[in-house]
Amino acid sequence: MASFTPYTYIQCPCQEPTSQNRPADDAPSPTSQDQPDDDDHTFDPRAPRSNYSLYPLEYLLYCDVCHQIRCPRCVAEELVTVYCPNCLFEVGSSSLKTEGNRCTRSCFQCPICIGPLAVQSLESAPDPSLLTAESASPVPPSGPWILACSYCNWNSSEIGVKFDKPQGIFSQLAKLRHGDDHAAKHAAAGSGDLSPKKSDAAPGTAKARFAALKSFYGAQNSTGPASGSGLAGIGDYGFSSPGALSRIMNLYSGGSMGGGGGGGLKAKPKSSVMREADAVSEGFRVVDLDESAAVSKLRREGWGGTVTREQAQAQVEEGARFADELWPIPYLLRTKRSKRCPVCRHIISKPESKVGNTRWRIRLVANNSIPSIAIKPLNQSSVLLKPLQPAQFLLTFKNPVFEEIKVTLATPAATPGRFASKVTVLCPQFTIDANTDTDMYLDDVLKDGEKDGRRRRADEGTTHQAEAGKIWERGRNWVSIVVEVVPASLRVEEPPALLRKEGDPEPDLSPLKEDEDVLEIPMFVRLEWEGDASQDQVGTTAGKEKDTREKRELAYWCAIGIGRISQE
Image (cartoon, rainbow, N blue to C red; front, side, top):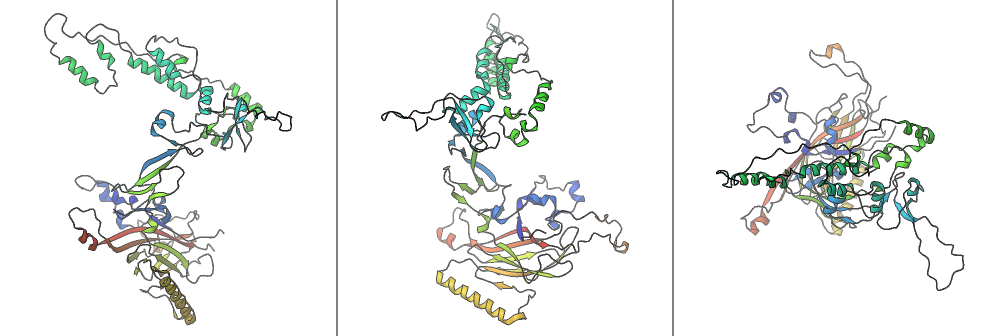
């Protein structure tokens, strides 16, 4: 059986049911009257909902304004920098809107192995052993050029793609794949003839077809009826203009409604009916249901000639089914993001804006504000927990802040789940000294004192035993307490009929599920300490702000994995 490492996961308060909004009149809904309040229930770490709220302490952040834990799911993210992971070039927001979220600086990935592609010349370099004039300069390599992968030896010549020059590979590849710009062509022709007979050039990709359809229907909307009436100028405004309604109302309220002659407004003629795209050059395509060519190609090239699911998903455009239909993949851009508290909008994490700098300008991790919990068996020799036999564990709480913390623990008498194990915390309330930074000499003295105390305790033998209401060991900024557990038996048996009551649900007699043999303890932790008052209040003097102390508290649930129960 695989070895087990004890763990501690902390629940983020954003997943609590009390955070959900209630109606304005605070009247309980009919469903809430029938169901009991979730706050009265013990936290169940095995519930499916708990999988999305439990995190290790290293994954959590802490807001020093709200004094609450923040997880990756509840923070508000903001973009700081957008860059290419290959060339580390920073991309502006305007380029993202026009060119998309791919790098346009000749950075490509291999479609077979996702390795980086390099630009190489098809012509081999001249042999250095050949005789040349002493004053002759080395001949630079000439084209054509290809993209080659040094890992799997794939190159773009396998799909018939060659380049004329080693610069501007992205634009050359887009021209080879998409052809001319269909959007510009249709925009130029949209103001004239609207007949279905267009240029014979047909867009071959989904992106080109979308651009052709967009330009065609845009030309349909922008073209109005030719009329010499007073309302002929209304069609020039366009339906997408935000001031179209106000302009139309100004035409009718201009004072020329009454009277005879030609001064009055004439009735608006009926506009022409918009037609649908029916030509290939306009983006229309008839689906080809004949798969005989693809079937014959599959028989000829076999399974090795097809693409995998990962290769097809990595492609920029869909539709590739065979290996010769794979194109080089432009690098997907990456981002650096800052994180804000969702309640007070305070920045709790912000990286450096420079791409090459991996430091953080602001990083409020929870590990610097919440005591860490370490688990260690007290006197256990075997790896597995024996059913129905008491076992004791040491929980060590380490204080990272510079204030004394009062800790209050609460656990259910029996763990939730099908196999209920008994849990007893011998010292549920204690204090942890502050993490004061003293000089090295005092630290050495404290370490020597701790070693002497442990040595004296070892000499005493069995005189030191775990007692209720007393801590096991105390250090400069840490405290160890004892937790006693009685693991449950993992035998799946039907309970006796005498112990069953009327209305009880049917017992679950299914086989043992995955990780159901892990003894996991839900523990409620409450922290209380005194800190400096926040200086957000206006009108207080500087002297009072320095002397004022306020009481703070933090409460959260955590799941502690003790070990695996033996199934024998």
